Length: 316
Ligand code: 8YV
Image (cartoon, rainbow, N blue to C red; front, side, top):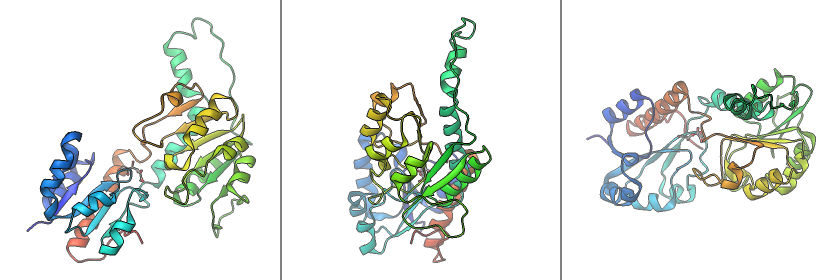
């Protein structure tokens, strides 16, 4: 008997989807229209032993409670902030994620966003397409990266990968996170506020969750200042979004480049209307190669669990 699993989202990797079909009875929630999902899940819930979910969706206490035979939640992402561990832990339900394989692509997107917003790439693309060049509309110069300071908030794998890339652009680097990172040559600021004060670019790479919620607040944005730029490739929950919009609109913060938002996929109209922002739809890990590697880890963790082998990437 193949174990039954809920598949909350499709992988773009055909191989991953084929392996899921081969080894499990898959209930594809993503194929069901939104308004029919509750009924669909209720219909299959009694026999579901595994859930393959995304970093954004995770699993809440409500869904976990509906699945009496649940044994494992395999998150197709590094972030597990949307997983309700309090609901899973007492039942001994295991959780896995996909560390390591997405580091480079997420770091690449952070750099792409930083470059795009600082050199105004989307705006200038629009300028050329709209014929403004031929029309002689003047273009104002942007600021050079070299010699500026990039502050990395959260100096784990992704934060360090962002730092090593930005060093190649001549940026000076600093970081802050609650615990000192041993064995790194990047200086740690005294606090997040100090990091923002000392930085021209603040790149948010810290995990989501209760401990970091709203930590990039009005005071941090103020400290980053009118010439400062916020880049967020982590989680929208880390940033006080209304304070960000107000700071950008009033010129108290220079610019922002965001891949993540407080209430995805909703992006506040007031944010999208601002000229000094670059926005992408949570695509840090969305490359063919990385989504395959992530999906493969989901398959490998589910298989290991149901075959009684050690999990490749358990969340402690
Ligand atoms: C994914 C992510 O977009 O890794 C994470 O935590 O947020 C992203 O890589 C998401 O999990 C897609 O499955």
